[in-house]
Amino acid sequence: MILQPLTLVIPTRDRPDFLEKCLRSVFSCQAEIPSVIVSDNSITDHSAIATLRRQYGFAYIRQSGKLSQTEHLNICCKELPSTPWVLVLHDDDELYPDSLRKLNTFLSQCENVGLVVAGIQYIDEQGTVRKEWIPKCHTTLRGEEALRYLGLEWRLRPPGMILSVQAVRKIGGYVEIGRTAADYVLATQLGYVSGVAFFPKFVGRFRQGIQQMTDVSTPEKSAEWLEFSIRQAELTAALGCSAATADQVMDYSTWWTFLGIASRWFPSQPSFVTQLARRSLHHSPRTGQWQRRVRREYPFLFWRPSWLAWKLCQFTQRARRFLEKL
Image (cartoon, rainbow, N blue to C red; front, side, top):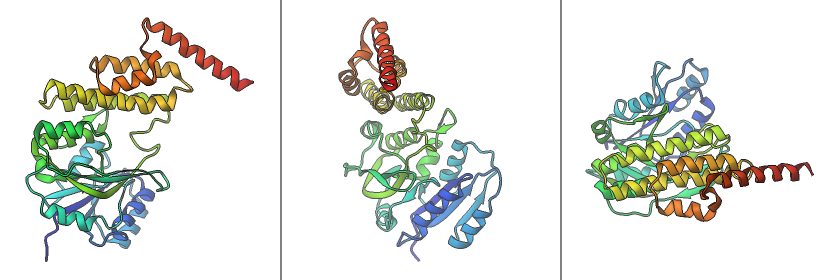
């Protein structure tokens, strides 16, 4: 019997519809199925869970229902696995078909790193693929070189992160930012402390939508997403890297996030985007590649005095409303 290098842990909470799709991507679409543990942090039990257990036969852990997201994820990646590696597959994400067979072979030969980064597909609520990403790096990175690479790659996210259980225990697991577990910080810290290797094939499918942290469907959620990104960059920059690398990470994380929000909200709420630009300027370094890009695309957001930009935004909003009435 060959010892499996990987445990698949699926944290879930009150989403049996997504969980069924997630489990199907494991048990019906993989040639090799590893140890699978579903960790249920629901407040109330669901008959659907019992049905899924009979159908797929996974190991099941019933949590208290009172764990925070961060507490739950730390249990999933530090306490539940009995193998060297763990892939935490959120219940609304999926595995890429027949991805674990080659991944298991890769992990069996991968030593002395804390993190393996693999490719992911971005899917919508219906499971349609919208974007794809595969890491281009083929060498193992460590220290500041690893931190710089990971810190300047926001497409790095679960389920394209395979974690060394020992390395996660060593650094203490996820940190929490505003009741949300900081995946980006965990990845950069693992790479910086223990090293990162790259698996240039698809492993996971990341679902985007209104239930995810990246939701920018309202101004309030967009502002929260920007604050979360800024705080993650601050924690990453505080790991001990050089000032130049810290500035690069802060510039990238802040203004990359801002661009996504601006493209969504500037046509309808330019004054809101102006406020976020001021907030971003307060936290980011004075110069940077991504700030320069924003300055080229939205130059009036940086005018002095600032009231000129504010007046222009107000005029744009009023003109748009007037045209809509016409």
